[in-house]
Image 1 (cartoon, helix red, strand yellow):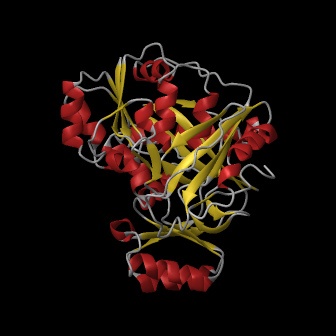
Image 2 (cartoon, rainbow, N blue to C red):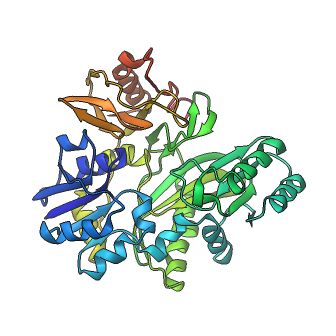
Length: 415
């Protein structure tokens, strides 16, 4: 099969590496890809939001299957455009991707279908938002309604911090159009975990649970990012996984069908294990990043076979390695705020089955330079989480005192 992957980050590189294991793969393209992905697949210089050009290319290159990584083209209707031209695509249509594209839609949907989540209210006027914060107190969570690349969430520990976040979003437009409205919800306490599933209509095939470290600094300090590292499997009991699959993911797939928003693709549940059981923090309509980088390496199945089986209405019979996988993100100094690009990336000693996933990189004269906030991920598999961790941090040693890059030293600690 000729396969096209849409996207340019670490998630897409991880998908590419898994696809390369397939005996069913003929030719693999990535649009637009990055300098690291270019070592593994043919990169096509088409922006992921240029849907018309992507459709044209898919026809010209006789693409048999397209897999979409990032959220923005999903919410712009890439699956609708491909399907209208008879092109096979594994991705939710625009009216289903709204489960991620609008926090307020997702919250209303969960309330309607009795899917456990935090109490909330939606606001478009800052004075009403401030009054609600004064009434509810802190800690409290402020979320931009739309897409904000994983950064549109503030977990405020004080009322003044919450009010500032509401003002930044509604008045200052901190995340531009993403915060024309905001969702304010109760703060939930517990262990967070990510549970992704392959979904087609009302069929749900869960993956293993992962845990993402979203805060920028060690000890879960600082602002939220797109993710600074992850590991899988997260230690969640079978009872809580079964509940999450049946009462959250399955109910969501069923509800979307009732709403005429039938979901095909990856449904990502950002969940938290509270004293009352698992609840939803957020939904995504695609593979999580960086969770994908630690979940896919543990998948025994051929990913091409899995996706084609699901699209054909067959059970893919998912199987998983009896191992642990951990990955740590290397980020540009300053991320998630302002940072410089173009810094050379030192070679890292890949030993002990460690692997590299490239995200924000460019290839300049055979050398990699930084081209984004999250630059790359160093990952490793091992029989224990502790052993996987040791492999990763041994590989990262040359970057320990870097002036241009940084990474969290505590991914997978106390987990």
